[in-house]
Length: 103
Image: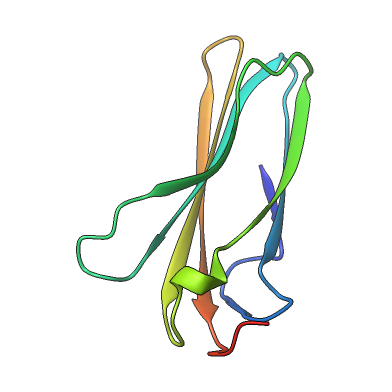
């Protein structure tokens, strides 16, 4: 699983897109991208889920909902993928909200 940009970046106006790419030697069946904030009792919310993929690769671009994030909020992305053989992968990527104004 590859995520761009990498972790520990600052997000804000015109800087809230993430590209995710996954490849496997078997059919990559599912890809799921979720996020949560550092707020108490924050749970993961799905940004995008691709199911029943028919290729051995899958990619997508997601944007974080800046209108739901205040300055200084720390965000964790969780990306999960599974293939047709039942293998599963998960990575976690952390980012910070830096700008207050939304354009």
